[in-house]
Image (tube, rainbow, N blue to C red):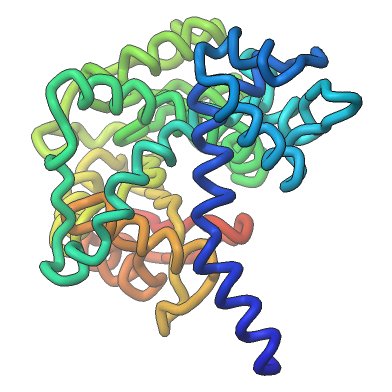
Length: 330
């Protein structure tokens, strides 16, 4: 990389927060939903969103410059990407995910202190009310993020021998729903705390799967298991835990498997030198900023935990640039 190219990349990265925060802030006021299939002046949009007209005009012009709005004759409308991903009610809506990212912002701006001490102060910005709001936003965000991927995972995995599965820390039950749609004989028990199970129950009912997907309100640290499941599915959980907790979770969860059953861990997995892929390396830093002990792990680390729990034939199943799956058999 030349000196000039290196300098330009440095400046782009250092100032990247400006574009990010503009998009996140506009999403907070549901600006893109207000503009859906409409052409409005900035003052009209300000009235509908309840914000300052001068400030919003500046933001809307900037959103036009970076490609998320279109401006013609003083009227603004959504770009193709904004209309597709940032309008409430659209099938591919990701606005809840962006709101979750915006909530993480307060932790990222405290990153220096986290690096200094080694631990993020995740309670510093929370009251009981904001924690409830955060939990709701988190469940919606994870469903936004996982829906399309869950469909791809369900198509990729051979679930023909799976009749009963346990979905640990299921969140919105997005994966169990996708698996059940793909496999008519499958039933699933989705386990999580009561609050996320409210969202899970709504999703299950919305998809008409109440007779095949059953909620279980319990912490995975306290749950007791009978060896009755053909599959234990653990998706996007271990990156939020420290090493000893990952080891403990896997050992506890193996107890739910029937002989010959499978455990699949789905997560962002780092290369052995921990510098790639890009998404996993960046996501590991996100876990540092937003959790007490979380980070991403390597295949070797996950394999060792699975072997210690009594699993064999451990293999990795590639998925995309963001996540992969690691499977072991009891």
